[in-house]
Image 1 (cartoon, rainbow, N blue to C red):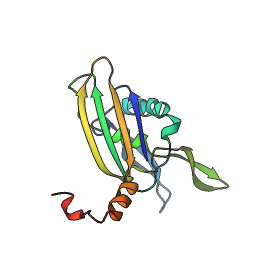
Image 2: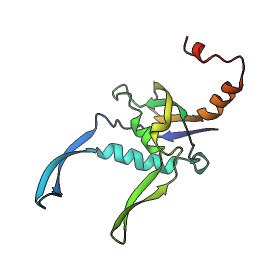
Image 3: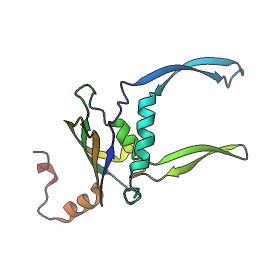
Length: 164
């Protein structure tokens, strides 16, 4: 299985755009309130995720099972941003929200993704380019299971020569 689509807009860097905030947490031991530092995504990264979620076509939300290969061609508006594909990989996974049902916290699926979790990505090819007029991310996601099965059935296939 293979899906291809384009996300318009300049991808935000997840690694270099974090904010440190303090959060109050109640101790499970004695019930006192404690403050802890917490790292959250920047507004730019959250805005990009929100926009990108709307741009993923319904036909691409196939929720691939097993391992996948992702090919990304990221076109930035300038040379300034670091090459960081993690926000794009996060956007393509299933989205859940936590709800409270009769005192029990449960996860509810909000968006079907291209795959369940970005841990399924076993091969990743990322290319970087500059396009000041039309920054975008061109994405191709392919299931590796079908390819691995075809190779396993091929008597001439030798897995030891694959990386030679």
